[in-house]
Image (cartoon, rainbow over all chains, first blue to last red):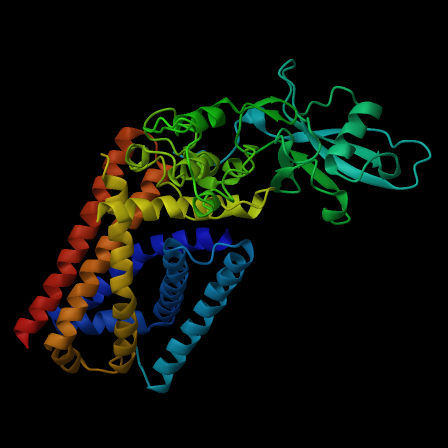
Length: 111
Length: 264
Length: 112
């Protein structure tokens, strides 16, 4: 139940994510000034927080989306399985987000 | 727009605390939703103390004890008291179920909150108006439509009959549909933008899966718009609450699969 | 009106499936290129094996997003006029943003 509304919220949040990706791509295409500005905004503390939040949002939506695809194929409908996979999606998304950002920091990312 | 708060005259206010029974060793506190169409009051939550040694172990037993011993105006639907008629479906401690099959021992140690089925028009106290729910069931044509005219019965192999298991046992208690957020927001539109709800859809699947039925395509056509079936987003409250252990979510997914397969 | 529900359902699941490998690829690639200067980033994006999957991701992603929000609007907005307008705005948003993103990829490919 909670996973379901979270799936909707993280889905709606992709409106914001779509803007982030588009702005970043457009800045890269438009020129050095535009790009540097965008990079510095993304790299600011608030920007980084938003990026981490966005990473979690898309991780959860993806893992929970897999749950949906299994349901559509007919698997995982028992009460117990559904509850378990819901927890897997939630915990998995946190682990995935941590992994992604750990990797990013290890590779010395400035953005 | 979805309403985010209840209208002023629907807000549940604090109700009466009814006296404890004399000489009762074991009491259980019930908080029961009350509303009468005969007065102009808001709905309220009354507190009753049930002597559990003086009544059976189920929530329904407790409610009927209150009606018999404390307040005879408490209004509820009930009949078989064994989980087969579906009359006593209500919201107990936040989850829809049958009062007659829910033991008081399954409700923790604290007070037991009893409310009518969610997002339904209240007739009185715990009785809701289920006419829409029944209309939606009728809409899916819950009867055999066969082109055969056999001299005796319509034949069916055991394998074919097995496909109806988990579907025919539905007692139409409405626990599932009234636990579904999509049904709350879209179940009572009254126009072509209406979601039928898990119970009606489970029954639709029951007839779609019946090998003796010849109207599969017409049945699927009827469900194919954006609302009747496709407001289901696999939220899965229905399966979580079904007091008969059925799986409406799985049945609905089955219908969606049938629609995809026939569109190939 | 009748085929609409199933068509939406198929497209939603189809774009989801396509996006699983694409998103995974994109996230990993993005991390390894996070330290790029602008010229380095542009060289990478301009390569066909970056531009093409990225373009596909944008197309599938924005289509999926538009369908998802359409479902949300259908769920919560019941007044026909408001609903019609919001559905239109939703499509517009996806189209405009998608166009800008695709243009950016093409522009980078041409500039480099």
